[in-house]
Length: 248
Ligand SMILES: NC(=O)c1ccc[n+]([C@@H]2O[C@H](COP(=O)([O-])OP(=O)(O)OC[C@H]3O[C@@H](n4cnc5c(N)ncnc54)[C@H](O)[C@@H]3O)[C@@H](O)[C@H]2O)c1
Image (tube, rainbow, N blue to C red; front, side):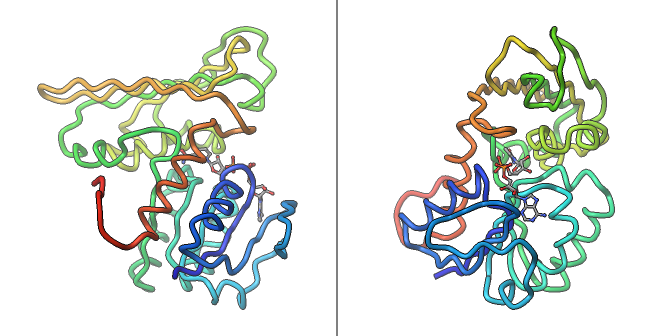
């Protein structure tokens, strides 16, 4: 049985928490969150080294900045499944994550989250010539007040992550799996007419032209309805042992 700790337990975290309880394949050893209330659980608001020691897998579902602050505390004790992938757009974080994984012999699991096919993008990382992502969200979701459709960012993915760290985890995941934060092109559109999070992804290489259009109703402040389901599937693939069909 894996021993799981939560860093952040909002929309995605609570979906994972209930999924673990239903499946029974892991023990929840701590929940750290600033404000979450989970019946029957003690929720701590600050990192507690004694609790971290009890975990062998920590699920980060908080923010990129929290992840940066906690990185060594996490990786010195446990593997990490992280949802705030924009943290990787900071070169210091990327280097530190690599150093700590090597030092402590840990894995960082990167979920496909709001999109599909991150494994396939990674498999083609040496052959993509151009990767572009266009995301359209409501102004509210982006923390803005636009009254008409507005392009709020158009440039390399690294800058998009800096400007909208809570909204472009899809861009960060694709950049990380594919051709990097400086080569991947991001466009973010704020549109008061939409109630979905929409991502148009276009990958081009010699003899290859792949497009994905993904639209998910905006269920939380930053998260669409699909992501909690995908998060649970990712956790299953980390935790479940046994026989049967395995998608790879
Ligand atoms: N990878 C993806 O495709 C993808 C998709 C959607 C969301 N996300 C990201 O996943 C993360 C979680 O998303 P969510 O919808 O569950 O967010 P949420 O706002 O519903 O939950 C975040 C939780 O983190 C807690 N938190 C914030 N600061 C904290 C701190 N210092 N210590 C402990 N807890 C803290 C908050 O209290 C909150 O309960 C966000 O960073 C979001 O941008 C990633």
